[in-house]
Length: 71
Image (cartoon, rainbow, N blue to C red; front, side, top):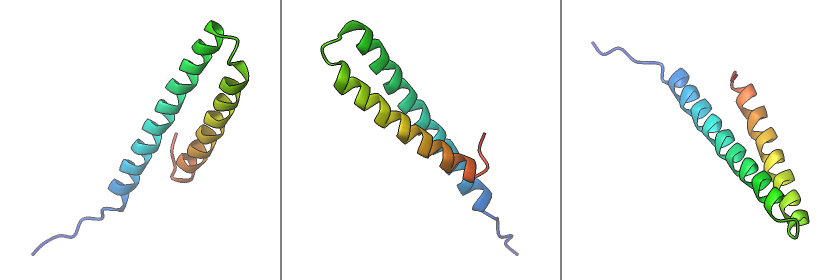
């Protein structure tokens, strides 16, 4: 007789890992923009707008991770 495995916890874990990876990528892009800002002041306005956009995406991803019981 086959035993059915509850895959929901596994799917949730995979989704949490994917969101955590997404947050890491956003953090790396945010850091790179910070380094870029220190090097070039001419594009400061555009880079600040991009940083704010990335920060908002990070907050949204973090909220989604918290809904799934994340860290």
